[in-house]
Amino acid sequence: MTLLEIFPSLRSGMPSPRVDTTVWPCETHYDDLGRITVGGVALADLADQYGTPTYVLDETEVRRRCQAYRKHFPDAEIIYAAKALLTKSVAGWVAEEGLSVDVCSAGELAIALAAGVTPERIVLHGSGKPFAELETAVAAGVGRIVIDSLTEITLLSALVQRPQRVLLRLSPGIDVHGHPAVKTGVADQKFGFPLGSAQAAEAVERILRQPGLELVGFHCHLGSQIHDPDYYGEAVRRMVAAMAHVRDEHDVLLTELDLGGGHAVAYRSGDAEMNLYVLADILDDALDAACARHGFPRPHLALEPGRAIVARAGVTLYRVMTVKHIEGGRTFVIVDGGMNDNPRVALYGARYDAVVANRHPTGPHMTATVAGRYCEAGDILATDVRVPADLRPGEILAIPCTGAYHHSLASSYNGVGRPPLVSVDKGRCRELIRRETPADLLTRDLG
Ligand code: LLP
Image (cartoon, rainbow, N blue to C red):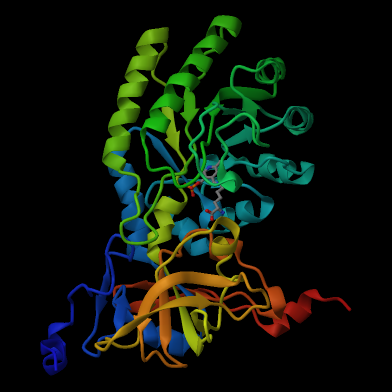
């Protein structure tokens, strides 16, 4: 018998050795029964109350991450990239913490507005914004629209009644060596205009010719999961040079520089993440140097973190359906969720950890692949994870760092509705999004 088994109360309030606090929410502990708690609530209780799979979101962790950005970048505008995760509550929390919100569709705009986010603090993105969505955004009075194509300039100029502030999206030719699906800083991809290209110059000229459009600055987004801050320093140098070029050519002073998001988080123990302290230093130095070099006034900086605000605040709960030892093959732990609630493994080869949440396992462990319930062999949630060798159907597996691009990327493949999203905070839980049921699926099916 271990000391913890003799005195279970020793566990209470201590961080669990099963959970790495760089990957789990800060408020992760375990209770007297050895169960993992987040935000003061036992994950196993949440699984019982809301069923599985369920997305759990620690409100304090989201707010802390917002506060960390505000602290490290006191002069910058922090714009939360809502595509990572958006609900009315999440929009409300980030707005309360002083962040602006980046939306990329009429749907996200509607949620942000319903949450009471000031339109002025909303930025609209998108590589193919439909006319109706531009119309809605302009009518709502969004603060800035990030122009991504020449067509958009024509459409926007046709519909604005009063001056609309816009940013122009440029790709600064910086290859962050990420997954091709999320690499956006290089020239040959669908977003924006290559910096220094004839098309970029034409876009600037066309915007400046439109009395209804006010070009306030440039935008770039280098990609995802970037942990080397030097890429952003290089982006600053290139973008400020381009802003100085506009001043020299057109006698127009651009005042805003939006560097997009893409700051890496750790999905598993030991993964590299962006160090905000170092990033702030590098951006500061790069701005000083670039502005001095071009005799350019320091622009207002904007950053658009999405993942870095919400990823670590999220934990997804699954119930084990079966454990299968394939003769001559792997051991599969099959759970009641999978690629519908987390398509990131299939899409980008993302790697996750999985931990049993309903007890403190003391016996031997085995290496297993956590697979989902859906009809595809690629429906995998985690490979080569260590789980208790006596793991049984009905137990709860928790996968940490699932707050970003999980709920927002979910589907209802195989007719399985999307999971609920439950927030936890100081021992209390609240359902933010309810589970999608077969009745919901039937409501959309008009026969
Ligand atoms: N700003 C813009 C213009 C973006 O396109 C994005 C993400 C962000 C900010 C926020 O990036 P973040 O800080 O969250 O990395 N589904 C993929 C990620 C796609 C990101 C698309 N754009 C994934 O699950 O990894």
